[in-house]
Image 1 (cartoon, helix red, strand yellow):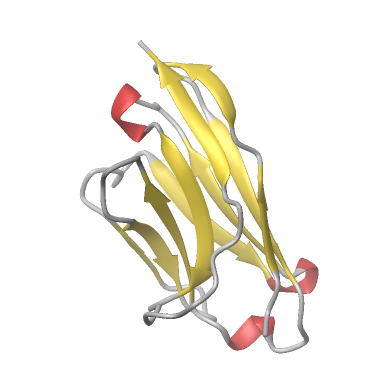
Image 2: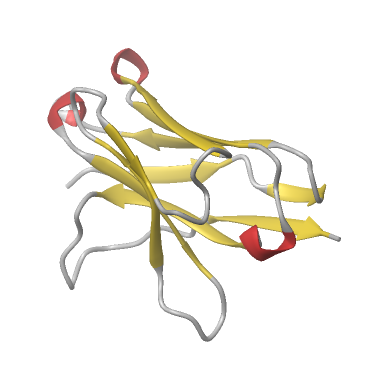
Length: 116
């Protein structure tokens, strides 16, 4: 299985920016479609953005125009650039394959907190 480690979260004020990173293992990373997901306590995990192995992207309506997903296959890394952050973006952010099925393993994620 591919091992995924998220980093880059933190505490920022509304309107600020963060860049999240997802470091992956495995030689076949370049062919995997990947996604960033987020979850708040008591809510279902939701897909924020996705990117195919070829670089095609898709975004949730709530983040469209503010977030950008990208990947560097040479570094086995997926990024999420988050601009114009809002308090409602506060969540634990995770990366994984896209789409995901029940039973997949999730890492620890990285916490993003946006203050008003």
